[in-house]
Image (cartoon, rainbow, N blue to C red; front, side, top):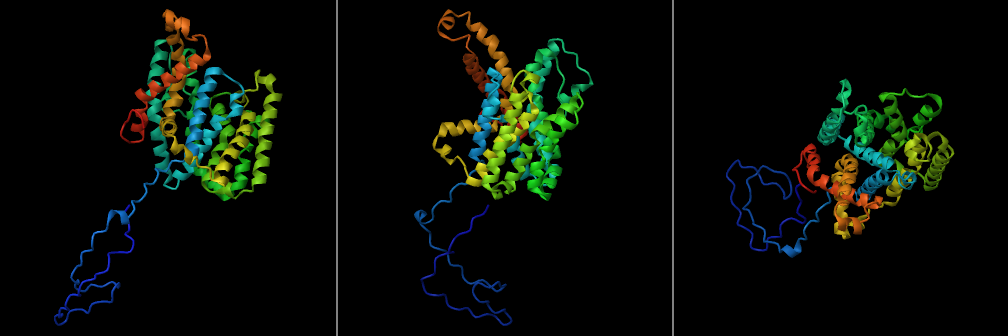
Length: 404
């Protein structure tokens, strides 16, 4: 972007140049400041301005929002924590997937200010190469361990449905539901955003209707289509909530109504989860999509509304350079962390088993502790970020880097 100098050149203080007689037929000079095609007056070079008189223009941030970045980083940490310890209450403390879908919806609405086909191609391009790179290792490992693929292997190319696999690799590929749901939301977003803008508040509230329908009125088929439809219905509100934040709809809502309705949704989702434990054996929201939908809707609405209404930006993170850098790495390598974290936790177990062969490790390290496995898992996640994170840079058509 070009800059505009303020005030123009300094005034000329020396004697004015002698007028030059114009030849016959020459045009008459225009008044100062008026556009003209007359012959130029002698050019006066401006005096140099001291550097102290012109303060340097502050460098603008690259468009990142530290509040949203921090939410995404904490959400990813919660995902790894849940997959390590299996705490049923973790999803209630922080509904990570609802947060991630809401943040993705906000970014998608912003991107759709450009032509929709171009935006969809860009989103798919940024998602698929990291998925292919990760999937290559998972598929090869499953083939070595006896997996016999069929035509459904095409879902390992474009995950519009859950990619197939065997039980040996299930812990690795079961997380792919998020990528599949994200991909469907990306494809549906141009239509969803158009419908949302017809009646924003009504569409936002009614986006909970699909999960009510599939819970009480119509049971989706027990196949890839049905499972995918259930996940879309569960998180549709959070995705459209991202639209509402981007379009300024949340900011215009009254605080009392937002807080009361959000707490009511949280209360209803929690009540449903605790009163239906017999169906799943737990109150874990991941096992009860209906409760997940309402709990996430209320919880994430409060987080997004706080941002919209109060203007929370977490600018204070800039004062803590290392913490700010960690948050930035989590966001720049979000797909890598999500895809590779389960493999890191899987590999942590045989690695810790080798520690038992070292007497000092056996004596002084808490090798049986899940917290120790949690720490080793994060070390391996860091290794995967260094070894595999560059694929996200390639997918984004930027220079590959070990760390952003």
